[in-house]
Length: 587
Ligand code: PEP
Ligand code: MG
Image (tube, rainbow, N blue to C red; front, side, top):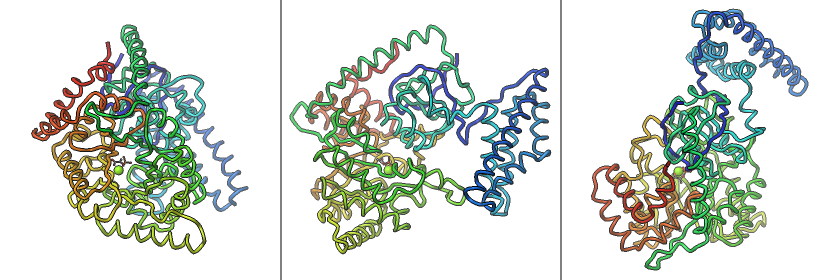
């Protein structure tokens, strides 16, 4: 048995056999072998290379027939590497000298090769790094199986263990079979974590080397409430956790009753509770959980989930599906927030990699530098705007020029539609995400130029505290309870109220039980969150009075460190709804 501690990002507990995903960055564990096994490892290596060459011959033929002989030549590089006696010699030598498995030797030698190519001056050769990864995956696929492909065809329940998953990989997991996931990388508000939560899949991230500790087929317990992963549990652990799984299921059934009740405090103030979604298919479940509308529709996931750029019509259809499902309820469509960790797999090539992607050309910046992309989306939104109460929201606004430019482009698109005789709502409300400190500090000038504001604490925290939201090595520094973050969200709320600007908060903290009382006490009356969190948040709201919330918010503002604030908020929340916290502990 082996227990590993990571960061809990999506609640729930699951017990199942593991599937270790062969992601690009996966670490193949270093398994040693006895000297007598060396010849059989050589044999396995030879067979895997032989099969890989056969694959490549077949691919070359197919490519030649469909794309022409010139393009098929890319496979010559692959075949050339696989036939290179120097390369295979290095792998064989490593198996012998270190007494390691063939997969480990392939992994080490090809990674070394990739690093060497990446450091070359020649741009043409540098681009061959992806080919080296491709070759590595092909040989490893023959040695240890194509687990990525298998994920789509699982015969029974499983938990996924990966170095990291991209948001699009997470979005495509088969929820009926995949019961939980655990990754080496990631932080509490990385987009993979957010998606796992939205899908209702328990998840633990930031485990650093869980891929090295688990083999496909091992029994694993993933405890998304406490952030622990138990590899090959003993009988006693299994029994305890089986009881916990049953208790959590009971707790969820009780909570679900709260979803359809109004979110009204004990002293009668109604709080608007909306949902964050990535796909329109999530809307029915969000309404069942008790959402009154969609406060954040992350439209970039349509891009991340498809192989090619979605057309205007495909985007229009997605927005119409959302409008129809919402049947008159509000829908806030956020324009594309691509870039940083949200990259289509095709974009993940070396030419696009920025030194500081979260500070680089992401989100509205990327749209403003790529007008056809931006205009296509705006046309689709505007066309759908006559069918329901749609609002449009620009992400990552960090200076006034960006907002004005975005609005100008919106006006251009409206004019084009007008000229083409296509209907749209010309009074469509326009808002911004407040997720950059400069914008939060200057919020007054923005409030004068928009119809609404939505505070995105996931990014606001990372930019205020200089902590990458997806980096497990600094995850302990990332905290919504940091006094500077609380100060910012308090100031933004006050200015919004003073200028009578509609405001809500849609970062992950809106759905975390520890922060609900604080947010109400600071004055927030509209929250948008991941759908599974709604019943619990409603329960908390219905158990408190605003007087009590204001007292908690005042006291929380007096502490100096995030730890003190967090411990205080947790103890206050626990007093109000002890069962929310008890329901999550292990017997
Ligand atoms: C945020 O930054 O708080 C937010 C809601 O947007 P995202 O998580 O998609 O960056
Ligand atoms: Mg954001």
